[in-house]
Image 1 (tube, rainbow, N blue to C red):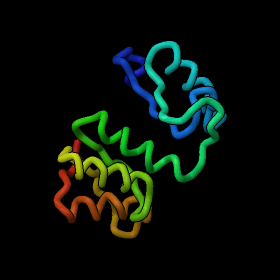
Image 2: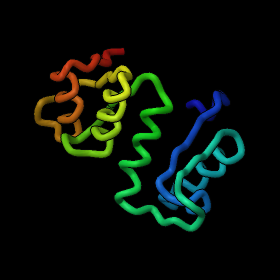
Image 3: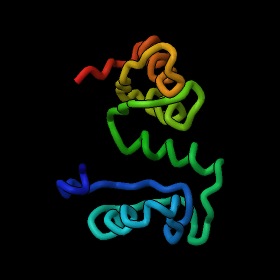
Image 4: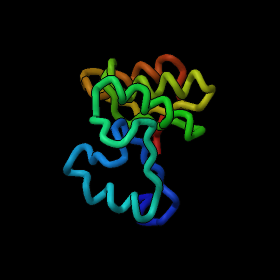
Length: 120
């Protein structure tokens, strides 16, 4: 949506700027390159390694003042991002889920811990 409205979208990637990951996001990557900003702390040629993404998430959390969590497993990169946001005293807002939805357990945990509830 932000790209369509030309609102200055920023993409933070967990690999080198010359690596498109996942490959099916190539069109989005090109749109961001042309109309937004793509940043990485990794040098050219760096492949997307699993341990890069938690570090990338700290940058995502630092770039905003609010963290909206729409879907999250209890142990996930999304929860890492929410934790970074909380450590930065940023507001965390979570979308509530059914108790048996594994992709909503993290959201429900955040709400239980005092996160704002996303209702609209």
